[in-house]
Image (cartoon, rainbow, N blue to C red; front, side):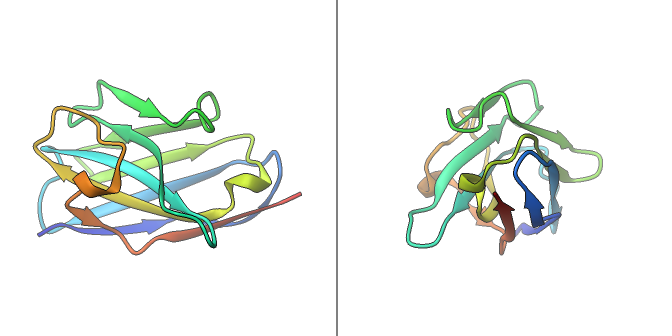
Length: 125
């Protein structure tokens, strides 16, 4: 079992930055591809960014490419999402997820084995 806890969300203005953290416990995440998803009110959960087990490969949704950066520190069992130039449309609950043993960075919710409880990000205009 892997427990994931997100933190770092909050209320910011458009153009500001936030860094989300996802702290894992229970097992090392070194063999898990990790992903960030988000869900806005009334919308489905959508892929934001993903990172391979070693951190050598990353993938982003087109809507955040160039503004968000995913990274990981396996020694700290933590994954990060640096979000710059935030826009009101980035407002959502952000979730961290873990996918065991996959060499492919999953972009759908179905492939992920563990999820955090989410952290709210609100961007005002």
